[in-house]
Length: 66
Image (cartoon, rainbow, N blue to C red):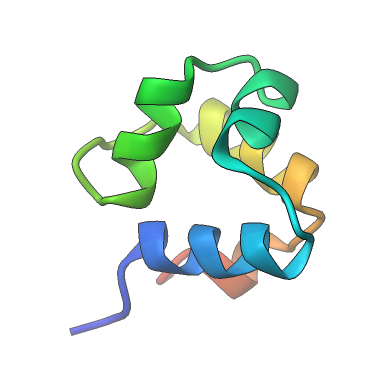
């Protein structure tokens, strides 16, 4: 089974030294929603994922399993 998206997002965030609230604010989502995404409890829209990836400065191919 491929690695979960949330885990990869968390790794990318930590590499940048950002807190969840930093990413949430910049990606225009609530902190609670972003935290649930990292825990793989939410299925964000592609648009939301794009905004998060832009904040984290990572390519979608590094995060998404397809």
